[in-house]
Image (spheres, rainbow, N blue to C red):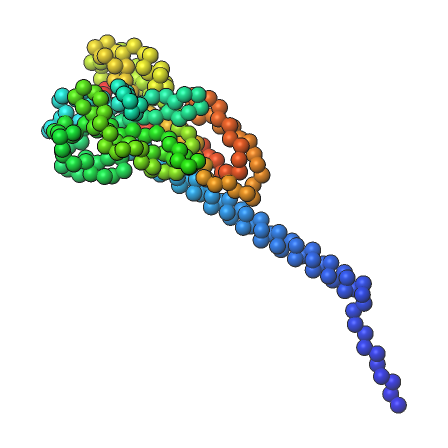
Length: 284
């Protein structure tokens, strides 16, 4: 008579060891997945910030290159033409000027586009109709500034028609948002070594704020110190717009050009961008 074999299985200790290994490897796998997703979301948020900054800089650099354009076929003869609209700001307070404290600078470009060729648009692309406000002059100023609505900051713009007395008529009732996430903007203006307004072969000498330009004596033969600008340098502080709760609460400090240090404490993704643009239609 054969003896029956006793079936043996895993011991309790072996089961506990196997379960422990399973928990360890499972935790590692889950942690890796969570970290991968967090890293992916952070990269995507950073890419969004970069896209917003690129769009904002493209909008402004395009206008800088157009600034000061004068239509020689039908110029605005009765309107004082310049590259930048520096005043009078009037009750709208919409001209080229420096911000106060840590506030953003703002800049207004002037141009005299040919009538009815499709270039007479406001800063968001809306057509400017030939009416009594525009008349045959069609000298416009596009203002770029940083606005805030419901806690969300943005690069915005507003278009004005410049009257013969130099005052501005707003085309848009209020500034129009272009790119969200732009929190601060600082601007410097590149001045040349011009001594006389009749000089032609002048070169970039230094960069200065709007207040410094205004306080500078104009070249001989000119009444404005803005006549010899050849470049514009822009710095933008851009954020993701929303807190990233996968990140720790952090205090960061930023320095934009000649502006004061800016401090931010939150979980947003922040990046600093800058660009220098040469002016195609400088008055040199």
